[in-house]
Image 1 (cartoon, rainbow, N blue to C red):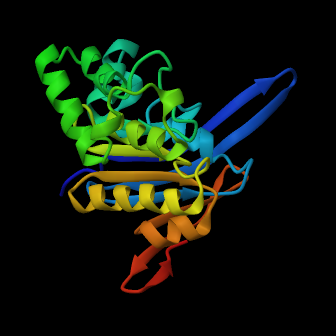
Image 2 (cartoon, rainbow, N blue to C red):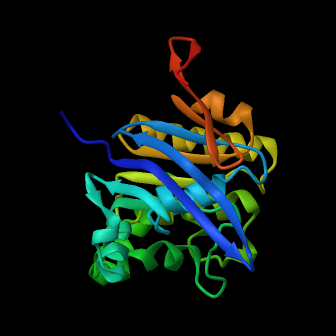
Length: 238
């Protein structure tokens, strides 16, 4: 039986603030298989941003285990883990996080440089990805010359630059109007149909229920319930 791509087993993430302990994540179990479209849902303060950092191997658990393809990420050194993340996971952020003094094409090329991809291949791959997100005519523009929707599509192209198995999207429609947000979500759904595993962090139920096939609903740092798409409806697992 194939191992899940990502597993969180009884994971907690606590922060010490003076004499107080903030239980941002308080014992959650999450399992994400290859080809899933998973949403992690919750209102502000539910712990979903912390969950994103844990699922994306950007942070370590206080207790419990985080497994990436069956390997405990605590066993990796930071450099090795960064390389693994760079190959396996592409990140899309609500605030785009593009480098302002790099063009769209250069932003897409940047993650490939850290994976030591040759310059010619970096250029060819970035041009192909910008064509995929319909920005061929904007590849030499800087972020401040692009609309919010165009910047988010550059961010998607950048997330795909090392051909990762997993795309982790943190509120990717949060700074976009409804029409542009739908375009971005449809693009993520298309990528999922092509075999990419999508992990969506969102506070918007309509976005999660339209596109995901499994939803983890967080409240106060815990998984309140898990719903799974079945046919045209949903079943609750917890």
